[in-house]
Length: 317
Figure 1 (cartoon, one colour):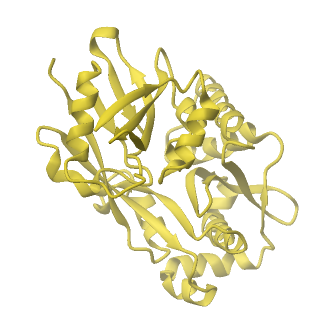
Figure 2 (figure 1 turned 90 degrees about the horizontal axis):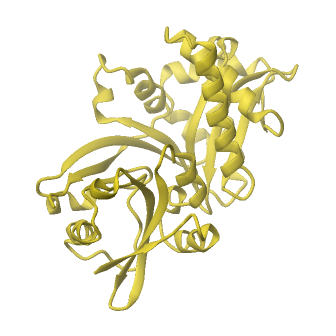
């Protein structure tokens, strides 16, 4: 197996065509990689070839100085043919031969969970992802809900909330509701931090909304006030929750539960069949963990999480 560099920044459309032909392409697109590019990092793809054929592509960021370069991806790629044993170790060795000194494979929508035993000397970490199967009918999905989610859904049903796409002022909507979320967690933001958030959200919408596979949805009340938002990454069969937040009023009236419930209804009328709620660190099962509340919220929909594994490996010269 061989790796051949691909300059995503010079040919982003060419790279996106390669990513679209592979599985797990949600987190391999040039736009999503560019959203996470900061400082001197630059986007680069790796064409994974075997017997003269490209069997997968993995996109990510090249970081660090010339003598200490690192490669990091948001996910591990899908392959156009069954993965042979040792594919991860072979990939790491190929990256070493290209001069990389540190490798990190993320696990959004898929990691190295099938290859943990192939990575001696590497550090593995686990995440839990919640994948909602939309093939079940609404009555069955309602039975999956825990008591609190049913109560929140019933409470919000009397308010005439509706789901819609956000077409204008998207960065401002995301910044305002994210500010409310931070305040509820006693992480109040200074003006400079709010400007930083706004620029990041603008970057997200510029890169991903439209042809980039991203859509911003909002739950609004009868008067048009936005109570909760969800930024979704959408491919042919999967919609992935990338980020979201609720206003203070939305939090009080259960808008976040209603938002995901309405998203499931929306996607039932599209080719999408899997609604990925995103994930949390595996340690979030512990009540003392900072993200335990997020774990409880997502598990409240009755979805058993799947384990995803990320990998970090320091390569000696």
